[in-house]
Amino acid sequence: PPLEAHRPASEDVNNKPPPTSFARNRALSAILASTLLLSSSTAMTANPGNAYEPTDFASETVTQVVDSLKRSAGNIEDTFNTYTDIAAIITEGKGVGGAINYKGVQLERGYVADEDTTIYNPGLTLLTESEKERLVEAVIQNRQVGLQKNQWSENNEYAFDFLKEKLDPFHMVELRGYLSIVPIYGAVLYLATLAIQQFARDLFPVAYIVGAIAFFGPIAALIAFGS
Image (cartoon, rainbow, N blue to C red; front, side):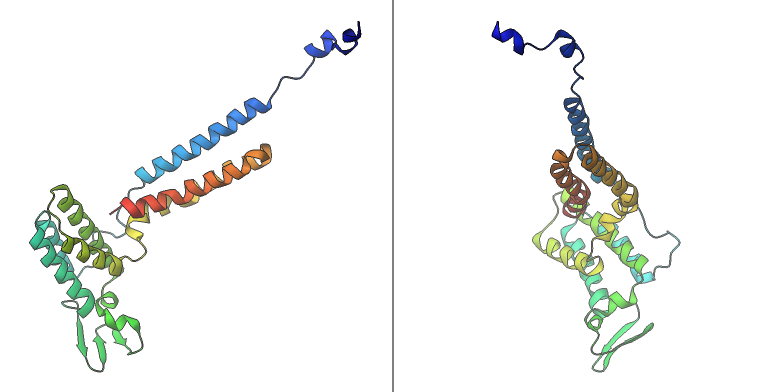
């Protein structure tokens, strides 16, 4: 019969190579899912930690303010007053060796010229990096306690935003833990994306987007929810 001519030989059916694309796609899909899972767990486990040592220098003014932040946590009025004291340190150099006059700002660690924008916040020039980090961490912890106890106001939030912007404009305190693992984490993402590009090019556009989300997603999450 005519149909017999189109019937494949039994040996051809038996010798047909097993489909591998489905299993390969499943494996690559598992890689993508694992990458997203790793990304979410990274954002949750990248704890800030301390970049400074407890023995690092901190002026008496800074240590007193940090202690005041701990004591005032959960008290709206005391917190705002302490935030005001920190703002005075930033804007006036109060208690850390600054003096403002019509010529400029005479500092113990140098002279700030009129054209230097730091003249408007001389305390930022006077404070060491470790002192700034101590203040930022203490301010963040104070805010977290206030929110937990429902003892927080709009004025407190406004003051917090001002201090955070001046002391840590690039959110280094929140990102410190994540940045410490970026070389390894980024390498894992790169190798996973490269493997998909080599073995499943049709999935590479999706893998590229997933890799970008996995890399930049924790940064956005830490900035949004870290403080």
